[in-house]
Amino acid sequence: MTATATQTFSILAADKLAQQGLDWINAQNDAELLDRPDLVELKKEQGQEAVDAEVGRLLAAGGVHAMVVRSGIKVTRAMLETPGELKIIARAGVGVDNIDLQAATDKGILVVNTAEASTITTAEHAFALMISLLRNIGPAYKTMSGGGWDRAKFKGRQLSGMTLGVVGFGRIGQTMAKRALAFGMNVVAFDPVFNSPTALDGKVKMYTDFEAMLPEADVLSFHVPLNDHTRGMLNAQTFEKCKDGVYVVNAARGGVVDEDAVVPALESGKCGGAALDVFTSEPPPEDSALRSHPKLLVTPHLGASTQEAQTAVSSDAAIACMAYLRGEGIKGAVNAGNLRVDLDPTQNGFVDLASRMAALISPMVTRGIATVSIELAGKSLHKAAGTVERAAMVGLLREHLADPVNMINVAQVAESRGIKIKTATIDEPTQAGPALTIEVHGPEGAVDDETLAADRSRRIVGRVYEDLKPRVVEINGYHMDMTPDGTMVLLQNEDLPGMIGHVGSAFGDAKVNIADMTISRRDQGSGRPTALMTLKVDGEPPAELIDQLNGTEGVLKLAVVKLPG
Image (cartoon, rainbow, N blue to C red):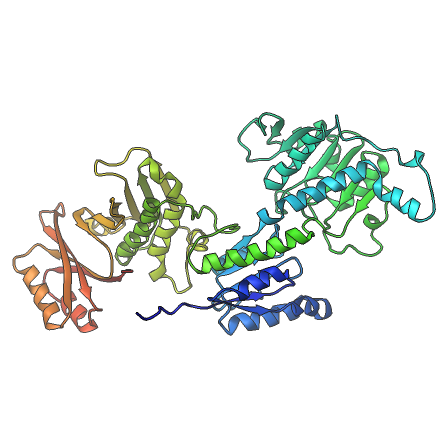
């Protein structure tokens, strides 16, 4: 028995990563490490453009399949201009604001982060900032280390009995809340997409309106990403909604709290003190008031900076890269939308079926695409709907576009072309079991000819049975039971005597073996019966054969489709 060759994947470590992650990559038989921690120094010495040029050169040369960064390197559109074989970018950490997500998505590159690995570490740091702020740990230490002793000056506040307002109730926000509850605090939380009035067994009152929560909180702790919805969410106007003397903790992202509003709020007493681990510009200018105000406690972005977290995020980033490249799944996706990898075998079977079905009807779409309607019948398939949608759109668009399209960028590609996608799920399966239907509709317009009107719509129906093999049971009203795989020829013809024999002879003369043939008939509605032949063939039909069949009397349409085996 001969061993099967395994592809080797190259991972570019474009930042300073913990040694354990690098060791993990080196220990993989199908991975090779390109370690470039010097890029961080290059950025300091020559700027971002120099990094863009160097990484861009490495990617364009080909052979780099994955890239891992921390917060020291920015991944820009210029860097990704010619991405070569790059398939995935992993952020060893939580935030991805140092990665141009739009540019990565445009190029079909998956972006993932390792949020889970640093959840506890980041929450612990936010909690440490909160308790240190309320007990004046920072200024008390400075006074004592300078030879002073002033107990009265540093009278603080106890946590027990105070109300913590958690802004963003994801993994880190919930971890922060659990620790606050253990210290006897009351907890309220804001999260715009948390669909319940309470959380953590009713112990946390939930708000979907940020400003409505503000008057409740003695302390605000931020745990949200930086985006257009969160940038500057605590500002001069929203500070006015807060309690007088509110304390603020931001260990999430610089810019979530409007830094220009912090110092005035501290001076007026509206804010009793603020603890900041993150800043809009990192590091902040040496003369920034954020460095020196007596009511500010600041740390240099230490949220995930523990030995345990750095080891974990480095390893998790490398593991996520290899899992995706090996086809084992996706973890921590940031730009993959509703793409799921935790599907059961039947659900995965329908994802595969969607791709094959769409590829089959793709050559029939010749008058443009306005709308794609997808329907999944069967409650068990609901979870797979988003992934089925993406697979179908890739199969439908791939052969029509010069630019690459894949499961990552297909939604954006469709949107940029004005294609509307309607995906519906219904609980009840068909009589024969769960089913998938894809309909492609062309642009509306004044059409007089019935044939042209029919050309605006294409329909295909498929099923996956207990053997998990994909089946197509209908194409444009032609009913059949056919397994879509390998090289297939779809031939629509007038239902004339001798047509089957003529087609078979033509393939035989061309020395192309027909492995399987399915034939279905229907009435066009104008009194002209037609048939659809779907033929599986061994090998690709030569162009001369295709031209001969296209010129045969009675042959209406013909397409060759190559599907996976």
